[in-house]
Image 1 (cartoon, rainbow over the protein chains, first blue to last red):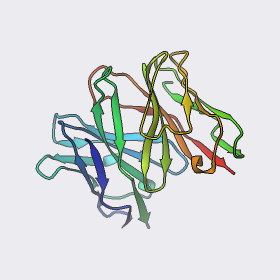
Image 2: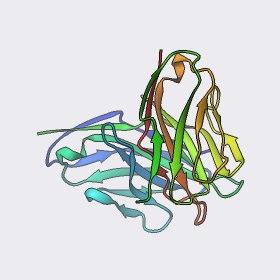
Image 3: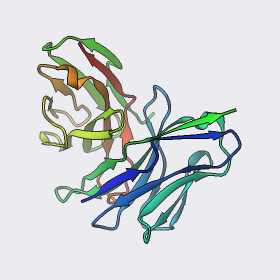
Image 4: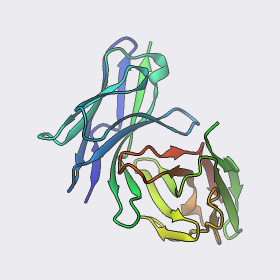
Length: 117
Length: 115
């Protein structure tokens, strides 16, 4: 069965410093992995996704994530935080449901990122 | 513009008063689903639909109903809401072709409070 663990519920950084949001996954199959971002009072936006191509995935707004099979990790990073990055971030694993090819998303609990001036 | 819309965005109601949250997508997606978001739990799937008239339970279906009479619409029905259904609800849609890496598109969310 698939599962996702986000290792930090809250992360606080100063503007201009690096961001690291940690995610470990468990999957019986070769997984597809996503990071979604949710800004206050907004819906979810896809940041990036890994689907068994390059292990280093680049997303929007300068974020990237590296798939490490040996560590079952998919950590999200950004070299320099901006105030607008303050949001909640969700690591997600996806698997195909055998009936009809529908891909079910399994969410981590979320990491709230605070960015201080 | 490709989008998923939900209505209402905010709703305060009382225990036992039936309500419906609507969801509509304009991308001709076959698959739609409903999630609830609770602090510390992430998003959990309530129900999903693989096509018109085809629906199935997700991980937390108790207390909810859905219907899929048209491809674009997937309403969530709470026949007798209770306070433990106070939550933030998201509708999502996607296409199955291409495997598990397909992006799901989310609506803006509906914040429901049941008193």
